[in-house]
Image 1 (cartoon, helix red, strand yellow):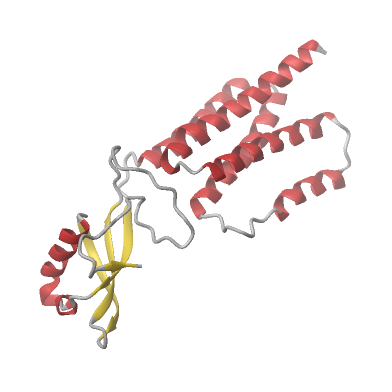
Image 2 (cartoon, rainbow, N blue to C red; image 1 turned 180 degrees about the vertical axis):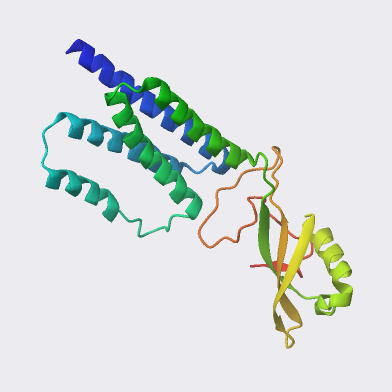
Length: 223
């Protein structure tokens, strides 16, 4: 019994350690959002425990499918989960499945390599190693005379001066001649220096790459 308990605690600790590395070391430093960190760790732990007990207790096939049907019916009705957080949730939910099966079969070396690969891939994507992601922001622009194709260089210069961003390109949307405004979508590199503050995203916010943009000229309003 002592050996079984020791093995159980070791396997549980290994699974939890990998989840902590992903959530605390990869996800949390980028978002600083504790809501999803709580969800990820809770999901990972409970799924692992359910799978462990399912492997050691004689259960019918119907009961097993019923337990996993509970997870499929879980829905967050108050806040829709963004695609990025949904991806993390899938990874966190899949890890205990892989770990419980591999640990029960004694596949330790391959399991450590598999978990390490998952952590490295997530870390590389979060740190944008080898990638140059592009962020966008919608702006209501009042200098409507600059939206003409021949004045595109002046438009880019004005937008860069107001936002402080190295804008790569712009897309002109709806034009309101009654108010002399135009909806403009600006595109810029989604780079975030370490000294910039991290502000958790809220529902309804426009994607600005977490940079907290504030235009010095109030005439250029963001939506």
